[in-house]
Length: 124
Image 1 (cartoon, helix red, strand yellow):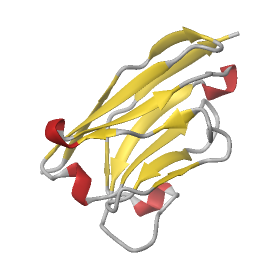
Image 2 (image 1 turned 90 degrees about the vertical axis):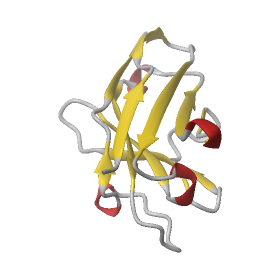
Image 3 (image 1 turned 45 degrees about the vertical axis):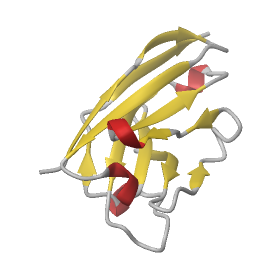
Image 4 (image 1 turned 120 degrees about the vertical axis):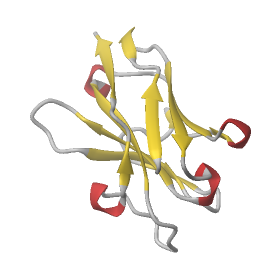
C-alpha cells in the first residue's frame, strides 16, 4: 500500500523559506513521478512542481526560480524547498505520486496517491 506523509508546513513571513517533506512508503519514490500541488481556500488544486522518474523537474510559472524539488533516495523522501515566499503562496500543500509514463502530468487527475496535506501560511 502506497502512503505519503507530508510535513514541514507552518507560518512564515513574506520573503522567508520553508522546506516541506514527503515521506513515501510502499514504493520507491525515485521510480515514479512525484508531484507537489497546492490548494488555497475557494480555489481548485493547482500544480506546483514535479520530479519525473527520470529525474527531470518541472515547475509552475508562479514558483519558477523560487521553489525546487530535491529528493533523498536513501530516505525515500521528496522535498519542496520554498524560498522568497509570498502571501499568495498560502495554501494547503499536497504531495502525490502516479504511474510512470513518458508524459509529465501537471493535473491532479494524473496522480493516484496523495498525502494528507500540510498548511503553509505566508504573512505579509
